[in-house]
Image 1: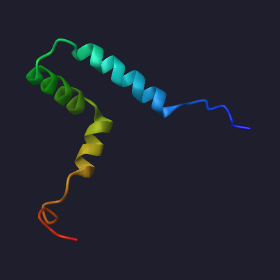
Image 2: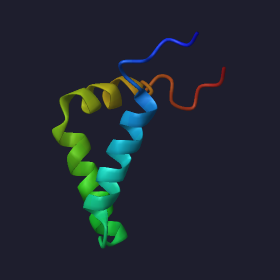
Image 3: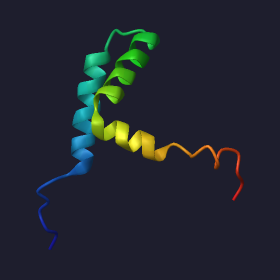
Length: 64
């Protein structure tokens, strides 16, 4: 028997995506870019992830 989930991350992603698309409806590409950039910069969790995911200067161009 399959256990009932209390939280569904796919449903959450779909709801967030639907809300963002609604907010960006009618925006030009430049306006969308600015809107998304502002959301990223204003969110401390996203910025922390963004900073952590950037390659360090010593790794840029390095081959594995």
